[in-house]
Length: 163
Image (cartoon, rainbow, N blue to C red):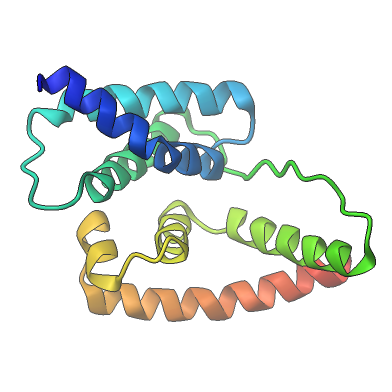
């Protein structure tokens, strides 16, 4: 299989990764599309150097996160999360949705690196994989994740009480 066909196939299989990063770092559809294209371009340019020492998805996360962070520095935009949810009819579902929205708002208020850490943690990557993607030690990841969990619990509670 040629490199271009392999890249397209792998990207199609893992494009949800790019969409998640774009949704976390951009607040409107046009900016998300621009960032998606930029991540795709950076991944294509770097694919020839992909050594297959890790899974493609791990490598793509790293490219996507680094590109998103660089994109922000270049554009000097403040990151936020665009929430588009339909309100459920039942009261219990509404409460759960409100809590979920509060959590997303809390995550959106984090810094760029902290957002990346939480996103990868929520995707069930282990500390070693997260550290590898972000260029920090697994112990540092564990410490940061524990601090972020505490911070997010407090922020989510405050945001939920305000809604």
